[in-house]
Image (cartoon, rainbow, N blue to C red):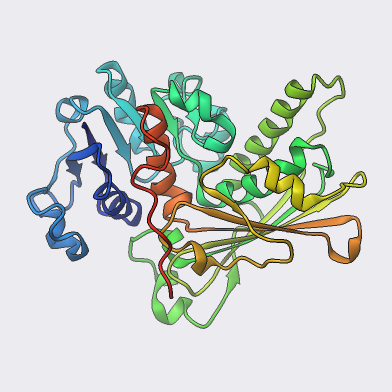
Length: 356
């Protein structure tokens, strides 16, 4: 049994961590922090957790207490993990960060997108990007994990087989993505009110969204790994990605419709996807002709994919759905934890999706 702490446990990703970890046979949540809710019992704030965390209460973040944990999750806004991560790592505690603090390897680029200096640039080289379908072996030995964002997870998993096989033009990629309202966080915002978000849909961040550099970095990594594996001598083509996110009137879920221009006759695209993900426990390639629904992944750590080639033309369309709070955040964080501590990758993550 390992002891874990959660920093910033009052948001949606924090409570999702608690819900999922309640089913984990090898993990005990020994500390959970919140400056604003210190002293409040978890089960009083979240009645759905009654019977699971009846004695656990929120406390002030304390480096000494957190440093005694085997692992600490940061379910915090950007910039918070910078201040504590280094000290925890020095104490031998592994850090799994669900924020954007360590996702971008370039500190200057991070600063441009997040409007503040990076607070721990010395840790960037050590941080492992926690997408298991790409970096499983690195994750196993990591001390610091940068859990991918929700949109980046759905987009990268959709494009991965096509870029690895060199079948699409990487300079002409389009990701048309939709997210539920929980993607905006639990804080009170006018745009998240029922009367504002219900019965409406809108695009946002069309001119540049913070997940864009993360997605582009991940797609470049896919290209690079594919070139190494194929010992290719061709020059890596630049990533040209148009990424437009939308807010949809649902609580949770991501739907990504991904477009790529084929550069060669691709053969059997369905077989390509099925082969690439045959041994991935949390990627489900659906039968040919399928249109996956966000409700089919509600509450689970699965990405469901379907690949189409309309009219047998030169455009390939990939449909990718995830739960933004699970495979897009807390579930993927636990998947990383399982790999880091040698547990079965599925542990605590095997429950079926919620329907309806």
